[in-house]
Length: 172
Image 1 (cartoon, rainbow, N blue to C red):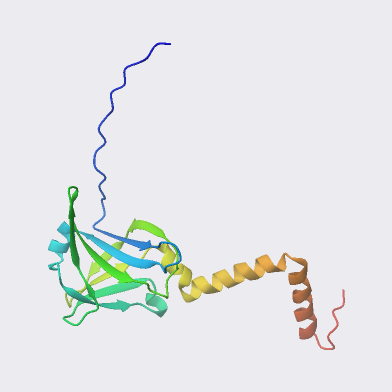
Image 2 (image 1 turned 180 degrees about the vertical axis):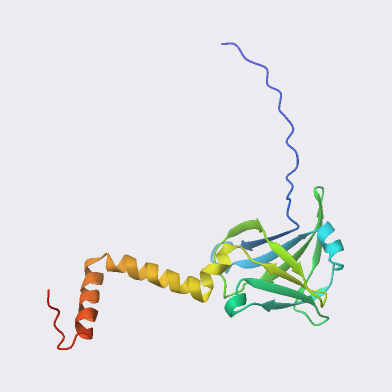
């Protein structure tokens, strides 16, 4: 049986195009933790310094899914500098944020807007919408629809409809 020569091709280092990425990191039964990662060039462009303490503001209502990071000497999180052979970047570890989903989500490119007060506003990925009021209503409707497909669910629907009719009897 003959053998053929094989020459491995060097793979280029992984790079990411977007200036900011967001991920949810989760291991085992521990609650998911939210991380925001900035390219070093973006940290410089935003005039942020590594080691800066940041106040975290979470959007609610129509602003659900937006996170604002504002420099504040008493802020609970820090922009930490990370460096490997592949480059340098800044990490902000927010920890567990109960208002968002509790599962692992890979790093995804997100939009960023600089604020006049020196802070930044990050638009979270689509998974953040799942816990908005509209997202929860949609999930409840979906669960109700799934339940209505079971015999028990159909009986409940008929009972509710009969209760809404004067005299409690549906005519069919």
